Image (cartoon, rainbow, N blue to C red):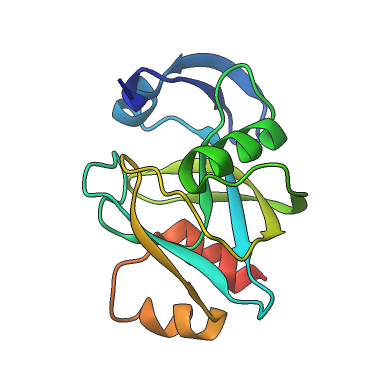
Length: 163
């Protein structure tokens, strides 16, 4: 059974230095800074695969997300997290992931150091039902326009604004 609240997560400080490893539910309930991987999946037309998050997600449930990805577990690197998350969420593995940049994001619900990657894949995708309801490719400008009308993850929109 998939129990994300029991995942052991790498906790870091504001300078992205490792502090400790704690269960995900404690990271969320205490509002601790953690690490996450973000993978922008482009197609040949340079559109990004956006995902509709399930309503059972512990943060931003039901929002659109521009990136596959998730928390970096206690025993893994950003790169390993990105590969694992891409395989889990979209069923994509064995393709090159290009690191773009690291960034810090904070709002009332989330404090995270993220590493952003990009890759190219046309699909088809095998969506993880616990995480992703459905998805589609969209142009970056179309995503930014849609984010004015529909809920998108704020960290994802910040990433798009940086690229």
